[in-house]
Image (cartoon, rainbow, N blue to C red; front, top):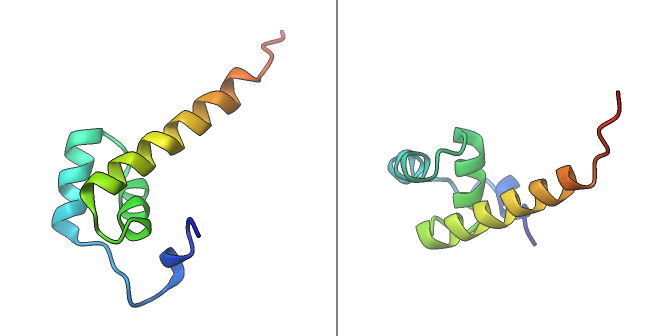
Amino acid sequence: MVGALRYCSAVKADLNLVKELRATTSFGIMDCRNALVDSGNDLKGARRLLRDWARTKAVKKLDRVATE
């Protein structure tokens, strides 16, 4: 269900929570907004989602082979 709430117009991210999450995590605005929407405006849950997303991106980058 990750990402399913993002497209529902009933759930919106609170702007103050987006600002706070962005200030504490240094993630982009849209990443913070999407994490808040997916977590139902739960700040702790949004931080957990951002951490998981960052870990997933890091694992994908580890699989790359640097060739020249």
